Structure formats: structure tokens, C-alpha cells
Image 1 (cartoon, rainbow, N blue to C red):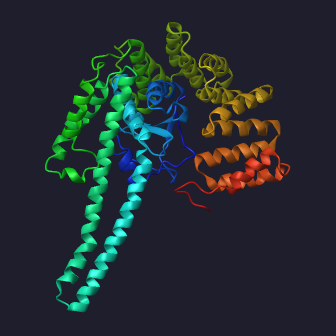
Image 2 (image 1 turned 45 degrees about the vertical axis):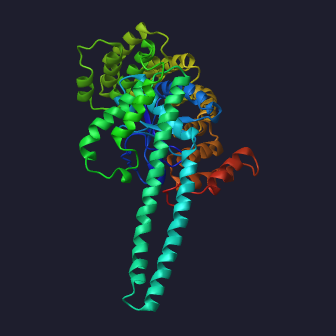
Image 3 (image 1 turned 90 degrees about the vertical axis):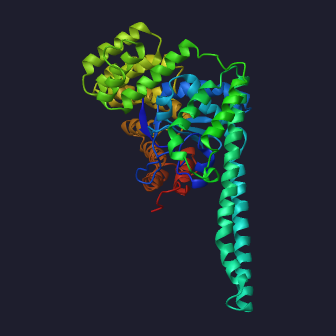
Length: 466
């Protein structure tokens, strides 16, 4: 279920945080209605990324921190950390990583930032820089006053004026130097974590080397001290030496893991790229499993449901226990206007995926979409279980609201609608719905308290309060 949605927490970052968190290149951030960049949700892709990062987080001592993977709807290569609880990765980084080891290396680097507490330390540096700037300005003003008292041509007056501009550049260079050191430390930590988990750092090196080669021309003549990262050639040379010292330098990815990686890349291509682009990347002559996966998804997305179902059924025949093939079949039927037929494959997908909440939400959506009241209680039970484990997906609350409305429970319907609106970033609608929900619940009940929390909640960063 590859869908675009919005996170409860704003992804709008300050320039400082972005500078600290960048792994390779700045994110080309886009905003929709001032809600921050949308994210992609897909059970298969998120599960693979969790498996990629789990051993690294364990080696870093962060396994119990519940670090989440967030897939950004951006085609450029980038990954970053922003709040100490999430690793953000553009879908473009997954698409451009030809091997699991390459994206795992980037995740190891970002884990290095988390383990080093770089975000908190950078905030401290910024606070110190602000103090230094204030002091410099005061000293500069004092020198100008002294110069004025000594005569209009006094050298002190000129020196004071210079002090207003010089400290800013010095402080900026100091901050950027600190960021460069953090990047180097994250590289070292990343290699350490990879080695501790018996993995090669070659993919990490290959990724950074590729971007170094692409940026060599643009980097010529530039002042290395105004870069937020070390000069590429210097950084990559140091990384190569460190990576080659690992006994796992030549270790290859497991073929089964490589296949799963290729399957996710094919899925992302089919959902995110134009149909002609998909078929250039995966021509019809390519009969590999990833290519057939891409073909099946692209076919259903462009209107040929019957042909798509035949292709998906062939995939299921080859891998009958692959939950994501059943999920795609259910999603194709649901989006093709056949919710009743979508129920069976989605039930199968839920069972095979160990009750993935995102797939449960899709099943709940199919149950609701049938319009059959006999499914209402089941839909509510499934959707409540899903949002309990995946609380930041608006889809679950939207479908839950529809199910409650069908049952005539308008208090719960308003509350669920308010929660969905809040997660989408629509604070005004969320407050209006929550206020109405409060009038339907008895004062002090759990539903009333949740509604009151939404009414009292401050708008998310970047949102209007009206």
C-alpha cells in the first residue's frame, strides 16, 4: 500500500538542523498547504528498512529507543535525522541504491548522528554562537563610541564598524567546521556499527564516492571552510581507508536480501514514476520477478485491472506466502471499485504479514467500502487495533470515522474525524470536529478527554491558528 500521507510532527526543519543532518545532499523540500513535505507509507518498504537498521541500532545501543523510519516523497538522494527519534530517507535514496549495502551504509551514517547526539550538541553550538555574536556587537559598538569621542577620524571608529561584520563570518566558519567534524564522526561511527554487525562498509563508500565524482567540477575553487561537509575528496579518502580496514570489506549482500531490495525498488518505480519510465527501467523483455512486479503494478495503476490481476496471480503462484503480492491484489481490486473482492486477498495479506497495521487499515477500508453493515463491527475492531499500533496514519482514523458513522456512533465518528484532520495538519477542522465530539461524550470519559486534548492542542509548526 504505497500512499502519500502526512506526519503529525512537522518535517519543516531549520537551516541549522538540516546542516547537521545531511548525509549526502540537501533535500529539495516541497510544501503542500504549509503542512510540510508529504511522506510515503508502505508496509513492505518500511519493513525492509527496519530490518536494515535493526542490527545497526542494536550495535549503537539505540535498539530500545524506537527509532522510526520515515520515507519522504522526494526523488533526489538524501537521508537525514531531525529529532533524535526518526531517520528520514527519500524514496530516491532507495531507488538509487543498487544494493542493500549501499542504503544500509547511509543508514549507518545517520545512526552515527543519532548515537553521537549531534543535534543536541549543534543546538548548544548555536546558542554559544548567538552569545558570541551579541558580545562581538557590544564590543564593536563600544569601540565606535570610543572612536566618536576621540574624533571622527579615529581608527577606533573604523575598527568598531569592522567588528560588526567580521565576527559573523568567523562564527559561521566555526559552526561549519563543527558540522564537518560531526560528519566525519558519523562516518567513523557508521563504519564501526557495520563492522560490529559483520557488514561491509563498501556500500557506504561507494555511495559517497559516487556523489564526490558528480560534484568534483562544481567544487573546484571553492573554499573548503564554507562547506557544511568536509571537501568530498578528503572525506571519501578517509572513509575508504577506514572502510577497507574492516575484515568484511569484500562481504556481499545475501542474494535473498538483494532480491527483496530489488522488489522494493521495482514497487517504488511502478507507483512513483511515469508508465513509460517504468517500462524503460523494466522492459517487457525482462522476465525477472522485480520486473514482473513493476509491470503488474503499473498495469493496474493505468486502468487495465483484468490484465493486472492475471499478472499478480502469476506472482502469487510463484511466491504464495508473500504478503505484499496479496496486498497489491487487494489494493488493485479496491481501487478498481471491487471492495467486496478485495477483502479475501487483504485478509490473507494481514495474516501473512503478522498483522501489519498499514495492511489492516487497507482491509478496514475495503470492509467499509462495501457498504454492507454486516462488516461494520469487524471494520471497527480491525481499524482500532491498527491505529493503536500505528497512530500517525490518517487513513486509519478516516475509515474508522466512516465505520462509526455507519453504526450511528457520531461521538466516536467526530473524534476519529478530528484525529484524522489533526494528523493531516488541518488544525482548524480538527478543533471544530473535536469541539462537537465533546458535546456528544459525557464529561470526563476517555472520548471526551481525547477530544479536549485536540481542542487544546497547539497548531503544528507552519500552520495557521485560525
